[in-house]
Length: 231
Image 1 (tube, rainbow, N blue to C red):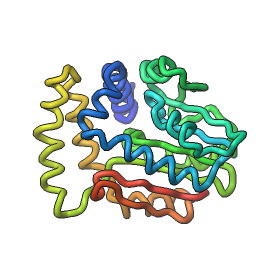
Image 2 (cartoon, rainbow, N blue to C red):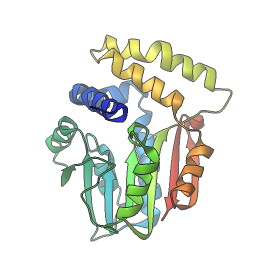
Image 3 (cartoon, rainbow, N blue to C red):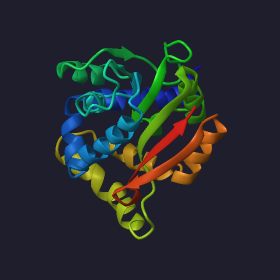
Image 4 (tube, rainbow, N blue to C red):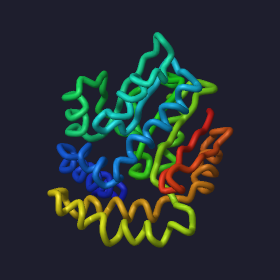
């Protein structure tokens, strides 16, 4: 019998399969172009570490991996690769000449212990069916002292929250549907953001799963948060 988490994973995977061809366009449109600034904040943070071996998990269409390389965030001889559980998304990344890429589930990564100095995951952590298990698996593939960077939609400042969540519930799915995207995918997006742990709760979860120095900084009034945890 298929378990509830497996059913949810299949549902999310199917949604990304459908969205993949228009994923980049929809990111630009629905974020008002802010997605580029959010990725830039991530690459600047990674550049402070200059990791030699990096995994971009939930790499999607590869924009984060490309930005990390173009912005000089890696060591001069650094090795980086992307992994995602959605093959159509990886195919979009390949069209851009981005690689190497691996088809992989974030809860069962096909890498040896301590394989990476850094792991990035941008707007994909929210979709893990078991976030604690995902953090432990990421911790396994990180080398001692390695750093995890999570860029994710979060909880905005209280003054913005009512307007933001109203937009997510009432306007985002309608706008997405108007440009040909599946409405249910963006209804799911809004629901998953509202249900996502607060910044402080996610930092606590990082510590519970073995990460030290777990902290965050808010972007765009807390609509997005950049979390960092060291193994």
